[in-house]
Length: 163
Image 1: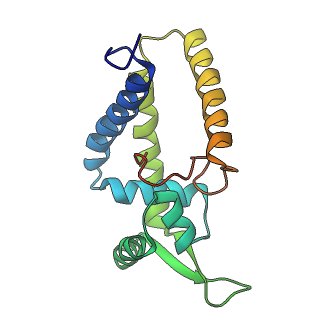
Image 2: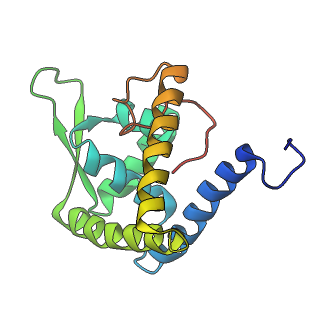
């Protein structure tokens, strides 16, 4: 099996991740969310109080782009900036009640998307797949030099696909 085969593991992993995002994007669009918005909701729900720089790292964006997105979401009532208790130069980002409610709806769609995608697998196969994928993720985090703190456990490599 080589890089010209459709069953090459690298292609399969990339295709699975892309297709999961595509299906999920379509489902959350019905809630009125863009990919950027659902990524911010997801990251801040896992890391409430992150700084703008930390969120930019989690989203794999430069700080200016993240700042514009944060401004739009703050103006739209999705998040709020709160002063850091120790360093007044830093503003901590928190989801509003509206955003937390939307995240709960979004999470239901995420669970349904995963369940639909894994439907061909038995419960035993799903558990084994999860165990193996977690082992591969841990290894990649080591290779990337990531301690798991930046993106809710995602390796912090620029240019990687957002998920």
